[in-house]
Structure formats: C-alpha cells, structure tokens
Amino acid sequence: MQGAPDLLRLATAGSVDDGKSTLIGRLLYETRQLCEDQYRAVERASRARGADYVDLALLTDGLRAEREQGITIDVAYRHFATPRRRFLLADTPGHVQYTRNMVTGASTADLALVLVDARKGIVEQTRRHVFLAALLRVPHLVLCVNKMDLVGYAEAVFARLRAELAALVAPLAFSSVTVIPIAALHGDNVTTCSPRMPWYTGPTLLEHLERVPLGGAVAQGPLRFPVQLVIRPRTAEQADYRGYAGPLVSGAVRVGDQVLVLPGGLTTRVAAIDTFDGPLAAAAAPRNVTLRLADELDISRGDLLCHPDSPPRVGQDLDAVLCWLAPTPLQPRGRYLLKHTARTVRALVHAVHYRIDIASFRPDPGVPVLGLNDIGRVTLRTTAPLAYDPYAQSRATGCFILIDEVTNHTVAGGLLLAPGAETAAGTA
Image (cartoon, rainbow, N blue to C red; front, side, top):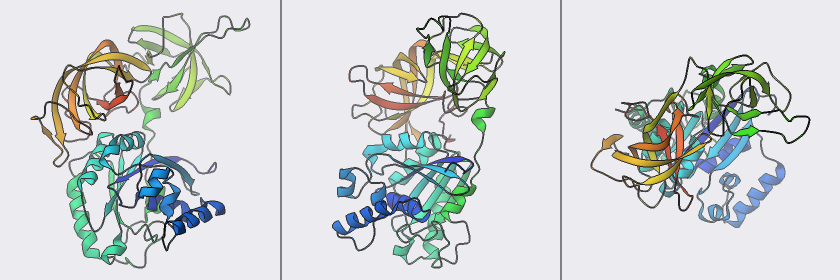
C-alpha cells in the first residue's frame, strides 16, 4: 500500500440484500488482501450458517447482529490496494433507519458505488442513496447492476435497467456516471471480464476504480484553516510560544503570507509553520499544521484563517439543506447547537421551506416539519457569526451538524447553500 500512488475513497450503498458486503468481500479476496486465517475463519462461519459456498460478505459484517441477520448495520471501513491505487472503502447500510450511517460513509467519498438488484430494479432506497450521493457532492457515481446470474445474464435486462438509471441520475450533478453489470457472488465483471456476459465491452469494476480521475481541488482552492487548538507550552524554554493548530482543509499557506482571521476581521502574517517532523516554508491541503503568527491577536478555537483576497462568507442567517436523523421531528423555531468545523454556536430554526420528495427529487412545500430520514431546505439563525463556504464550493467549510442541547445527540447533518440556491444536488 505504501507504493501505490494515490488514495480513492469510495462508499457502497443500495437497498437491503443487494449484495454490498458480498461485493466488498469479493474485491478483497480477488485483490489478495486476505490472510489465510481470515479466509479460513469466513469459510468456517459460512458452514456454520449452512451455506454451501464461502460467504465473503462476512468479511465486512463484523457485528454479531449483522452476521445473525445477514444485513449491514454499522459502517465498515476497509483498506485495500493494487499496484495502481490505494482504496479506503466504506460499506454502508441499506436499511432506511440507518440513513445516518450512509451519510457518514459518503460525506468524505470521492466515489459512490450504488448496487441495484437486477431482479428488483430501482427501489426507494436506490433513489435515496443516489440523491444523497449527489447532495453530498460525491463527484463520481458507479451503478452496479448486481445478481445478473439470477436473471440468466440477460443483456435485455441490463439494457432496460441502464436506461432507467440514466433517467434517474439525469437531473443530478455528478462528474461521471458508470453502469456495470456484475454478479458479485461469482466475481463476474468485478476484477475480470465475465465470459458469461460477452455483450458487455466496458471496464470491470476494479479497472474503473483504478482509472477514475482524482482531482486536487482542495490544494488548489482558497486558504481555509479552522483553528482547533491554541498551543501554549508550559515550559521555561518555550514560554513565549503561541501556535494555532488545525487542519489545512483547502488551499496553501507560506511563511510571510498575510492572513485574515474570521469572524473577528483582523489581519496578520504567518511567522512560521510547524509540524511534528519540523518547520516548513509552505504547506498545502490536506495537512495538519501549527501556524505561528507575527502579531498577538485574540484567536481561539473555531476561528478561521484565510487569505484576505479570497475570504469565505460570514453571516448568522444560513440557508441549508438538512438530512434529519432523529426520531423526534424537526419543528420550526426549534433550538439546537450547531457545530461547524471546530466552532459550536446556538442556532434557531427560523423556517422550514420544504421537504424534498425522494421519488421526484422535487420540493414538497406541503410538509411543514421534517421527520426521521427526511431531507429538506431550511433557514437557520445563529447566535454568533460563522465563516463558511457553500457546500458546492467546499465540503469541509460547507457542512455542519445539529446537536440536541438536552441529550447531546446529533439530530441532523446539514449542507450550507449560497443565497438563492435551491439544493446542493444540482436539482431545480
């Protein structure tokens, strides 16, 4: 894995029993990522469940409840690598009640891999997961028509589903969409071309994953540095040291650069860039660094550093899309904690404008509240200003979560919009 040139983050999704875990197990097995004892343990577990084949889904179904029910509940992360690329794969649940887990797994993904059962075609969860992937600005989408073995590897079935899937994703904003027929249980078109589907002339799934382009957008974007920690060592040798630690989530910074501190609005210059491995003259995203500044300013956790010529938006009235994750519905005028980067403020739900109809991807203004797993557009008002970018421009500074003040539970994930924008998914 150390020799592979880059990292692709991908998340699988789809309806229940579409074969997500089996596909991941097949990828791990055929790319030789398994130790012999792991394979033997899965073999024994398969026999214990009465299966007459090695159930590779057990490689990712790690919870006892998952193995007993044959479903995915939690997000399972797996690393694997080929000579061309490294992969970090998130296997997300298919049940609608675990939508929050799918949002978690896809929020940092470069590619979403959605499975469709060749026998069932497009179902509600297919629509939901495709829409969420677009909403979360996952740039690349792969639609795998799985279980082709159960429809006799029929080209006509695949052609019909490919046309339906093309119509489904047409209004959504993906950089690329690829449809591949597979049979994960037997490995057809997973890593090698299937002789049982000679009519398919496209790439195998692994070939596509190795070739899909990865952009360097975060390094090329404007400087965004959320302060996570103010470092003040308590030693005599470093009595005057004051550093601001955090992640460079976008752009680059150099010693001597002028920076603007938000939301305060003061400016200063970068005096030094420190890392665990020593000082740097310059650093680019994504990287964790500690910045020392030329002036002693009042800077604390949650402040954001940027270049003065490319600042983010600063405001207290925020337009956003929410994915509601709590059993208790969201109500207008509800009060919550809003966590954005490293900053936490109180927020009031000023208005619920509409819920998005998953069947049509259109606004449904007749619903004044959001319930569990609903997605809708809202306006929030915060008690203190936030420095942010629209999610369509920056995933890192355009997202937030809402937290119940009483229970401390996360109740929603949110995507910030530019004024006048409708959604972050490219729909009208």
